[in-house]
Length: 313
Ligand code: TA6
Image 1 (tube, protein in one colour):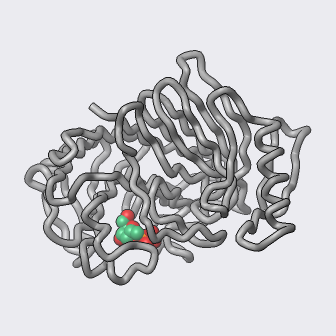
Image 2 (cartoon, protein in one colour; image 1 turned 90 degrees about the vertical axis):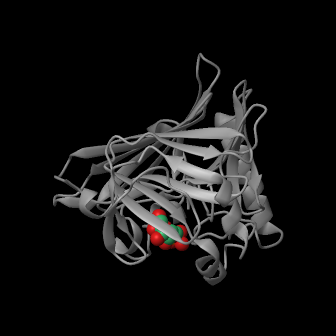
């Protein structure tokens, strides 16, 4: 169910866009796009179908191009002018309602990993309400999405500018404590994983998820096998150094004491239907999270904000 609104008076409930069927559903899709464009289109933001499955905002401004869909509040692309896409997307990803999208920035909410069912929560497979599109004075564009579930409500805000700024604020709307775990599960594109390193986590303790053992990281992270590291780190500013494309991606975060670094390598890649067997060569995840012992307990009415900022340096 896709909900559009600009303020409370213009709530429009529109059937979900199951555009993989013929005829009527495509006309539904066109109706959705017409509504989105009539309410939110600007010089730099327009709405089109994405992979013939979901409506999405296509941003093109003086800083970058980008894509974000109300489905999952899913950021799919961030291309600073003159650069390759900073975000990675699997060529095998599903684009089907109810399934996660393999790439971009999945919103793992309101739980991380196996802390609930489905794994990594419902945020990434739900339609979020598009609340506003703002063309900022500096020429960047900010889109805000909202999601309300029985125990919590979430506001997801993304700014497409010189950097990609993402904020996810959760409010406990229930009358009981809410245990919140989450991640902005960012997939970064690299030239070749063996030519990429992740710096900024030296001396930090981490859980190695592959065997549940704890270690202290000595220096820059390099990749030669399945890597699934859950760091206890509140202040990490990570730098992904890619010698193949001669670029550095800076990953900042806020409201998070967990940083996750993940590459599935070959055997796990083969087990994922929505991930090409050899695609592990071209990506690495560096995620701002509240996971495991960093899960947050929110009393009724309380909020927590997590954020990540991605930029090329
Ligand atoms: O964030 C790393 C991780 O938790 C890995 O353990 C792996 O499961 C990855 O997320 C992908 O999870 P997904 O549910 O998207 O296949």
